[in-house]
Length: 86
Image (cartoon, rainbow, N blue to C red):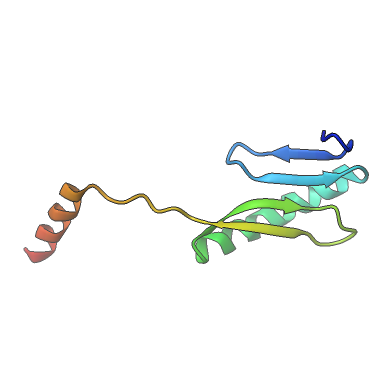
């Protein structure tokens, strides 16, 4: 609960869910229905969900962040390049 007495959840993968002060179960159920669609969209567009704001009568506001790709080890890159040549 925030200082303004509003419900806010944070998932294990750091997605912030804003539920507001009322109709929290209705809003949480809306998130549960919406989440798989958002995950698929994020995968398709190389981004991840930062927050989902459900404090609206219908719908939601979604914040996105780019997916950070970790650079591959240089030895691994060389091995892959050699494998392609063979």
